[in-house]
Image (tube, rainbow, N blue to C red; front, side, top):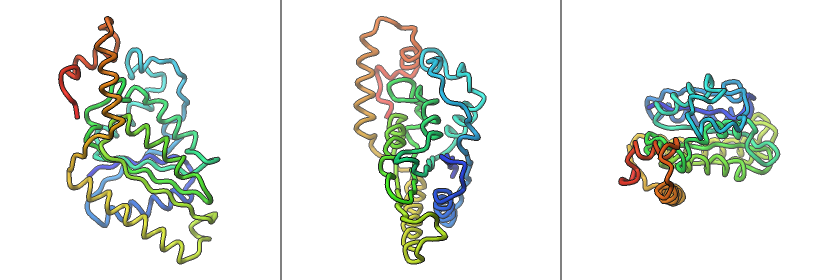
Length: 236
């Protein structure tokens, strides 16, 4: 089992500690190979909004030296883990910059069929509040990628670090993390293909209707949909 871990912060703090507990529990369940991506080190540029990936080809992205190897790792993985601490009640800027670079993967553009069988887990920690809002943006983007099933866990620690937590509270959270890791592992290992999310299906059929009515046949999106035969078949 291959899993790409996208770490939303360079700090090896609370979210990193929670991620290690999660990974170790998955390893206890069976054989897992993790590929680690750390943001912003592995993708240090902000999206320029040049639209080259949307209008022409993702290979023309001015930051393709970073984006393409990461995409290759994701394509070759069975699942993803995306983590983020809460920064001012939201996901980190690095996480947002990451998803900005892959807007061409949205179901309304050029979604990859490989994504339709993948599972993902979103993990977030906070000293106070905000995990729900932080994870929502990530989950929405993953649904638009066509990810088959997305699991999530937000932990409000009410402490500056794992080390300063009340031992009983820490044990409670570690149990939650381990149980979530087990469920994630077994769902991936089962090979079960869940029904696509409603929003994914709705956006697919909405975009198909739009593209069908367009006279333009040379746009990157329409050419891609013709190549995939998505005007006649259901890719899910």
